[in-house]
Length: 295
Image 1 (tube, rainbow, N blue to C red):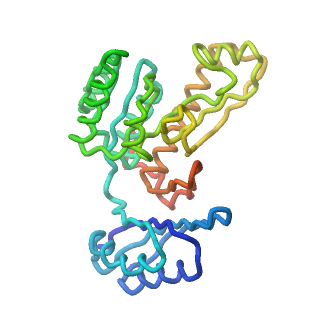
Image 2 (tube, rainbow, N blue to C red):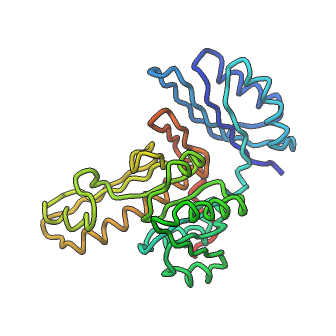
């Protein structure tokens, strides 16, 4: 039975990269099923993601080791991923549960290739719903006085569970620079796209009072610069003068949930590449949106 893998590659741009990769895979009995590439002419950086079937039983460890001989002359940073393996994720949430509940549903039906290994919150609001999904729930109170200790406990949970990604599903505490640096490229956040126009409390109310006609959401990697990390996914929904302030909130919650889920889907499928302050996000491979079950 064939095993499906994907190979991700980043390197300085030059001739022969694609030929070298395809030759390597072909010689090892691998059949390419999907391929995306991008050459950033401004930075001189090449990005590629290749999905393939191993028809001779070669495993990802063996392929990765042998690919080193191809990678070295091109100065490649690369990884071989087994697409059947689900990424371990810790979700962090405060008192807004729309993104958490959406992710729990998508996880339950297999629409996201992730394994939720824990949920961390600074409140008890969602303890019951998380435990009812047989997922460990950790309530860690955060104050100005105990912030270092609280973050140390959060990182202990990440390390104990082997989590590869932290998802801030409307977690309303600012992470320290140290935590952002330690988990660089492995923390995803979601927020409304009114920044920097409407900051602070009740941004949707502020937007309503100004007659805003577009509500958007942005999902990005977390950096020490608050809400300014490399963007993974964005979307908008149009509104009219007829909508109320509460409509703004409801529509905003919907678009936030969708955008966060799409960002996680892209990251978990290894479709996102950091490119300085930006990202390269390749299209989803055929079949990657299918769910294991309907509900």
